[in-house]
Amino acid sequence: MRKWNARISVLIMVLFLIHGIAGGFQLMGLIPGGQPIFHVISVLMVILILIHAGIGCKLTVDTIRICRKTGVSYFRENALFWTRRISGVALMILVLFHILLFWENGGEVLRLSLFEGPQLAANLLMAASLAVHILCNIRPLMVSLGKEGRHVSVRDIMLILAAVLLFCTIGFVIYYLRWNVFWKYR
Image 1 (cartoon, rainbow, N blue to C red):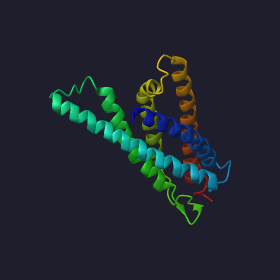
Image 2 (cartoon, helix red, strand yellow):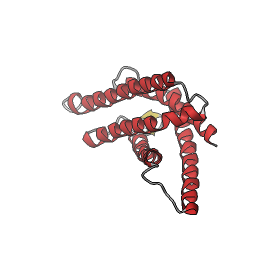
Image 3 (cartoon, helix red, strand yellow):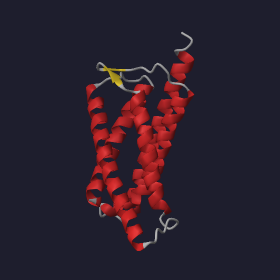
């Protein structure tokens, strides 16, 4: 089950890279929104995220059952395990908020009726929780994929994801400025 979860995680990361780059360009106003291929990528990514979350929940329940049977939880020793779970739950909540913000209506992407401080903060928190979640999970992912001794791969993946997350963050900030500075005073 862990190997399937690892493969799903890789697919999610690839789709996230495409979604993040395309979304950043759309938020900056450099490409038009509402492209059907981006919608398909988003829906596929959500489906994979739900499967990934389901597997994560099952693995968490299995771990809690083992802790109850043995009577020892090792909560402090398993801080990274719980950080992974907590960041995943936070990420799910923030992804849901992100989806609701950019929900489609009749085939047209909504240009938000409101994109102010709280909406910007929620999207920036989503990017931060994604960074934490990936940072905590990249080594176990590499182990599950049989690439545990390749530190260069981990650094390369983290560099690419950091660059895309920074690009997305810039896209959110530019969109916030476009909405609140440029469009507000037209």
